[in-house]
Length: 378
Ligand SMILES: *[C@@H]1O[C@H](CO)[C@@H](O)[C@H](O)[C@H]1NC(C)=O
Ligand SMILES: *[C@@H]1O[C@H](CO)[C@@H](O)[C@H](O)[C@H]1NC(C)=O
Image (cartoon, rainbow, N blue to C red; front, side, top):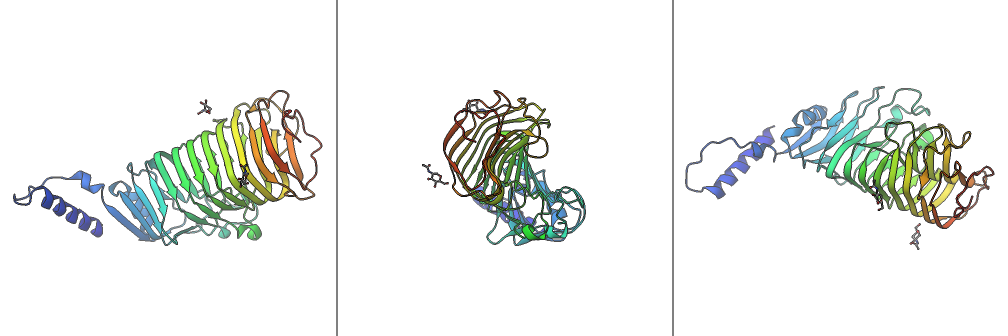
């Protein structure tokens, strides 16, 4: 608060000096000045103070904030146009609860990680190899209801307890150069550490993300106009649509994954429709994807997902239409025990596909492909 008042005072005198250098200034309320304040919060009171003051500050600097255990760093009521800047290392205390540990919502919001800044929830305190099962683990970042022209730039996130970034109810969010580094979880019991989970959102762009984790790099359960570009995914389950079906929103439309690498992962490309459910997966494009060191499936498209891959009979309640694969390079990418390509569609439920320059080799041929569109190869 002291620095806030200082800024207001300076701002007020500067304004008066320009507007009326001679006349004695009248004291008038200037509520708009409030919103121009830059506020800095730090230490163990930082989260509570930032949450309480969020509507008084146009810029919120979170400098080495230590969020206590069981507390959400809650910036979900920001004024339009607020700039949130993380500096130094942000930490969270340990508690078995659902989280989220960080929540940001608003219109025209820009979130920036300053040079060298880290968000470190130190997930290994929860890791037990069981992910969503086992001890209750807090989800990390609810990026929900970010709208207008919102940005999240240069955030570096380390070792989330379980899922990292949930994007839900957003319309108009661009995420640039985010790193989610859960590498330590490869050997220390990280599980279900999804990079980006996206639902009920539109006009989402994710550029230049680096994700080291132990589940989907990106999973899009529903949403429209979503682009993931220039990404690098290591250690996880690949670039996924779905699973789609059985939720309140079961439509995926106009999604592009492009110019990205998936390595050291269970799968490269995966499109999952839950059997026995309804919805639509339409206009999904994978273009310029490089695969290497894939353990299970290079490319997997299934209408018989039931919580596990390729279970039972496929059903056509969620058509997978206008799927486009273009320039997928995965020569010798799949382990000899894995499968290159698996496609299991219900009859007539995978129309209008494009399949161009797809090379995925190294693994076995999957013997149970069904209703494979004529342009594709299984
Ligand atoms: C998806 O893209 C197509 C082609 O550009 C367009 O006609 C359609 O309206 C888009 N759908 C949505 C839900 O934006
Ligand atoms: C194919 O994708 C690779 C990245 O995997 C990219 O470098 C290359 O330029 C693409 N080729 C074409 C013809 O688009």
